[in-house]
Length: 382
Image (cartoon, rainbow, N blue to C red; front, side, top):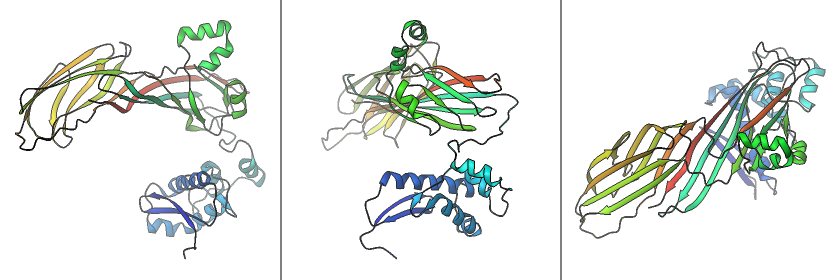
């Protein structure tokens, strides 16, 4: 049945549609967030692929999950960990539930993302800072768009109910600290202006808004602690292309690529797409590093370099033979695009300054930090 004047919103996953129907003007962001959370819950129970058979076999379980996650049209408990405490992984193989008091504490308490009684023989925290560099420059090298999207991923293997205090080299924090602390921090890494921060729900937003400190009780296992954006003109790679026509059937393309990151780092999986005309018949390529070949499907010469050290250069020269073109039509040049990964390098300059773990037993915690910068839309117009 379709309601007259109703609005429909849906999210598609493989062959499953999650649909929301309403007559009024609801909070659209809330509806989409609920649908996304509902999809994650279904994936945690049924796996990535939904079929008619496993949906029918677990109909009672899915009905109970829907009843628990929504009451009278309002989203309620959407925590996968808490739902599994209530229903287990499958209804027919559900583990014995907790006592009513303990379960109520898990559902209605302020810390529903972490259960009590967690114990590890070795307490460790792994922090991964992943950044995606987006850059668009004009043919003269002028930066038209430059930003870096970052995410701080964390894997916590900690006993008990620890409270963590996390710090980055945020410029506002370092200026607020002042004095010797700021000087010491500036010796390690200069302050970076971090914009558009979003946090995992375990972070106490009140303390962050007042004194810019990130304090939280972490979930057990892997989670995204925070996401951020930095407006930075950082260019890990600089491109210097030259296109010269030698008659109507010959084109010479030269490109110099220089890496602008520390020489103790190496970029891996470097791939540079150099566009050529669609009338290309043959290419003769000479590269100082890596391998390059013409790929007609992409309409470009693809130059691949497995390892590109920092503060170095590489050159390529391509002689392109063109088919005679009867119609004089200008070639619309596509931008040069670059893909790369730079392990243990932060393109924005964001650095982890500290991670303090406070727990009643005062155990020793080992901390591991890794960085990775990758290319997003990294392009130069011709």
